[in-house]
Image (cartoon, rainbow, N blue to C red; front, side, top):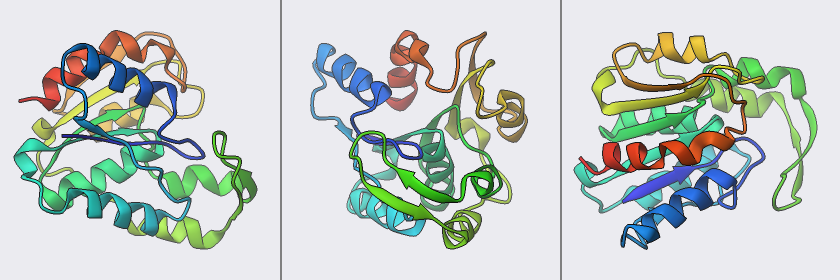
Length: 188
């Protein structure tokens, strides 16, 4: 089972989630992807993801986290001993998002909400001090990500399998070129 965790103000309808679902279907593996719509409240998002994991063998679950979803995937992988694919993952999102406090709108659902210091506190609570087993991670980054510095992720996940796309951006339209590698990693 693959669990796709979308990023900030995104949804399961994002390009990356849909591309992954299509590719799994092409491979005769329809139904192996679960992509929940995550709350803008970090602790609610984590609780929803953990509820999906209940009753599943950790050896048969791979998290795929994009941007903020990468932060969540890291926390869940460390807590539950899961594999995780991190796509342009947010490192210390409580620092990154501090500059955009205030009114927000989900790009897909249109939901409006206020990003507050309480959100940042919840994100900080989900920080992982140290990566315990880098071999359980696959890091997929674009070097020209305008939102997140790929070098920070590469340093944070030193020892992890990595796929570095020279160029690209935060939206990572080239992600489709890496789907087979992501699926292979998650199917081990």
